[in-house]
Length: 337
Image 1 (cartoon, helix red, strand yellow):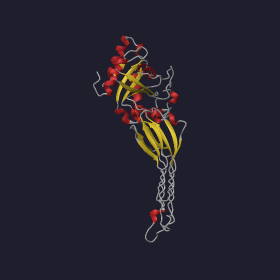
Image 2 (cartoon, one colour):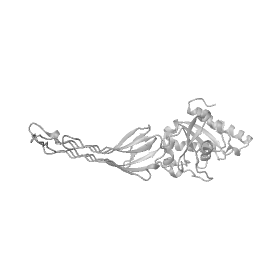
Image 3 (cartoon, rainbow, N blue to C red):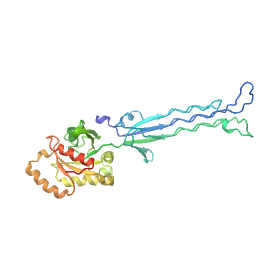
Image 4 (cartoon, rainbow, N blue to C red):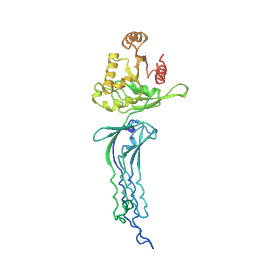
């Protein structure tokens, strides 16, 4: 999936169909000069329906088509024939799509199950034919109901990446490099901040042909929770991950301080994120010799009491199998060695 094709935020305008008119027809047949009312009902207008599709990973297919209009219901006719319903329009979205009212920004619902359907604009009800209005005192009503208008509205679709492991870290911490090494993903990689502007997904091959999904979330910067930079767009993707992998480079001035800043950003955005399992990976550790690594371990053992951390190097392929083993154990609820 290329970065340009990853679209996780679109606005759409929808218009459902108008209901058909009821018929005011009076039955007129040979030998039945006064057959009475036999006007049928109008058909309902078409709905606009959102449908969740597990095979979609992005909202890219909605990037250039943002207006959707359903068909109108057909009018009723004689012999109490009901008009056909207007054609429904289905809009497919990936799992993890959040639907908002664009005007109020209220979250209406989330699409989380494959095949799930939600009507976002109901078609107008068809009008009743004159057959419904006959009575003992009004035997030949010459009127019927018009169809009701459909609904029109603007909706915002936001996608939250569905992945098992979310990579969290400052820009240039090595997240894209790690993803490119342990998965088949091909994220853009360069030695400057904010290389990743969209989440990248990759499938990690594990032992015995088992797999899990990892997402490279764009780098967090201090103040992201207040919307600084592109903070809100980045942070919402972390909500769906079951395990968070904090990536901190070995050459950071203060590893604990970086971890605390990242944790604080997540807490300020959504305190529930702190309930997720966490693993800390010290990246770029090929720069460390054994003596320096031993010294760092002594410090980190004190600073990360109760937290599991390990040293890795994506470039030198060091510690990656241990990383996979640890993540797999966390995902499956087994103890981390």
